[in-house]
Amino acid sequence: MIPNVLTVAGSDSGGGAGIQADLKTMLALGVHGMSVVTAVTAQNSLGVQGAWELPVEAVRAQYRSVVDDIGVQAVKTGMLASAELVEAVAELIKGTDAPAVVDPVGVSKHGDALLAASALDSVRTKLLPVATVATPNLDEVAQITGVRVESESEMREAAAAVLAYGPRWVLIKGGHLPGDAVDLLTDGSEEHWLRAPRHDNRHTHGTGCTLASAIAAQLAKGRPVPEAVAAAKRYVTGAVAAGFALGGGIGPVDHGWRFRAGPGR
Ligand SMILES: Nc1ncnc2c1ncn2[C@@H]1O[C@H](COP(=O)(O)OP(=O)(O)O)[C@@H](O)[C@H]1O
Ligand SMILES: Cc1ncc(COP(=O)(O)OP(=O)(O)O)c(N)n1
Image 1: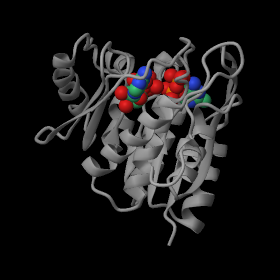
Image 2: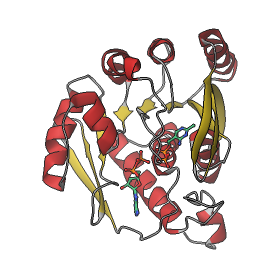
Image 3: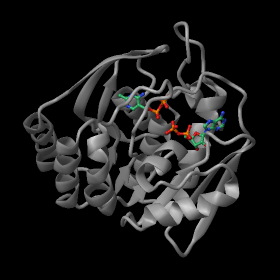
């Protein structure tokens, strides 16, 4: 059976992040990808030119259509835009018997807000508690917890601060620190450091969405969290290495890098 994975996220018209990145990642990792669109962005390699959120009934209806008939083995969340959508999605996940990867998307690489400041409290108190794995980047850690990470050693404190809101596991993404691309996965007792060489490639649009979807795909295949995250990290590292120029700004990671790299990878 091919596992079903559902992304609940915003659309990126440029195809590098959001729903488009999630579905490409799911295809590349051999699962059936499905989507609940929360918002539509007009977006390209230069930034986000516009964003429109969907009514909460439209989000609920998409979710129910997929989960009630088809069923899901994992859910991933991305851009949720507003407090109302964050709370509705948290409630839907709570009633779903599947692991949930929560990427608490706050701001795009270009600095465009993808979540209202007024939604942060709902992320803390409603969304994080229903997450199997939460995957904040360092800016999101600072927004959610107030902890500022400037070195690897400070990632432990950040992880503890996020875990205090209730996710079962947290993956602190150190992609914005200099040096190796190091992430910390912990549930408060086990600690796993995931280290990969930093690829000196400016075309990194979509890294966070790609990693979170890859984790969801691996969880849907039944892998335990540490194994799922390690496999997802290998996938995103390859995708960053193969990131390519598109438009006049920051191009996307290559979701199809394994198809292009030949057999055995
Ligand atoms: N230049 C890079 N080379 C290799 N891995 C990277 C690079 N930039 C980010 N990563 C990795 O990509 C994943 C997403 O991290 P990050 O870019 O911090 O997330 P976000 O897109 O949410 O800001 C992490 O595993 C991070 O370590
Ligand atoms: C619609 C939409 N959702 C999420 C993001 C952020 O994606 P991310 O993977 O963190 O990539 P960057 O924006 O940081 O390149 C987005 N841009 N659009």
